Length: 228
Image (cartoon, rainbow, N blue to C red):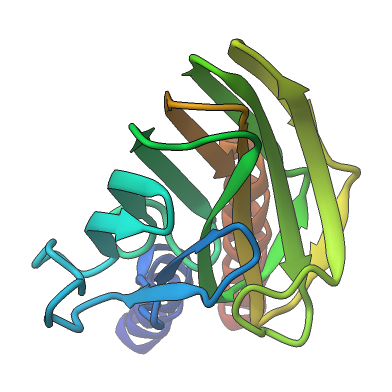
């Protein structure tokens, strides 16, 4: 009986560990102005124009990109936010152009690999303002686990301006993983402007609870077999 209890304890611990343990890959920000050369900022790579946030899973950039004089952008994901089996991403940015003449575009992206397994919908939310133009929010999933891949669109909100506030929900999706997720916000301006937003991409908690429940059911069946 003691041996059976020990086996059950180990099995339950493995289930909880598989759900709760974070999987840290290499989250990366990328800013692109007017279709020019992208400016990538990789987590934990500290250099001129590099990541200013020391925390794993948090990437912060402060600097100029094209005609956008000052950009303050932060992306958050696992292990500081969410986990592999409970994906959660947050992209926040404030972007200012004081000298723009005519239309210009800034694309702000945040991408991370190593998610899964998941059997759930994905929820997108954004709030923001743009004093001279519009904001468009899109999110993508890639079963091949590539950074910044747009293989499977999860949803979009906008374009809208001068303010944006909305949400979208993907269809039910089941992926064993690993897969990547990418948030993309496109800012269009028509002159000097300041745009700011907070965009999130999450799997709601029931998806995680379903995974946990399936694991606990397996442990229960193992217990019945051992007690026979």
